Length: 187
Image (cartoon, rainbow, N blue to C red; front, side, top):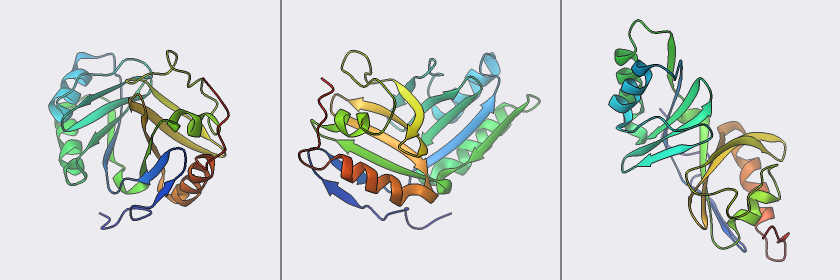
């Protein structure tokens, strides 16, 4: 397990703030999500229900995000990711599945402030207008040239994950996108 995050808490300020959030527990689960066993396993591991398509369910100790029809991303405390995997494996014994701790392979960012939608709208092919993209929705998409996923946790607050190997690139494009004077007017 890593002792430091990808960018050690880097921040950038513009018409929105971009922050690397540090180490975050992340577990990928690939399974038949339509089965009661999958729902029971996720409940046991994360204490949360399965999300709807392109949704995210958040709780006090983490979240469960829909990534594909057979894939979830479970967010938990960094030091709890291995225990989450063990619970999933135990609960899904006999069922075809894959549960992997991917915490050290990802970077985790916050984009916050009145211009947070603008920052992402310049980089991702997603309709981010209010009323179209709202809290509880998850998008797995491209951010400029790299894969990423993001969701809203409030009206002016997004969370974003990407591969750790492109964390510096993602931070830099988010920071440039957030520079004063760079709003594109998605509202």
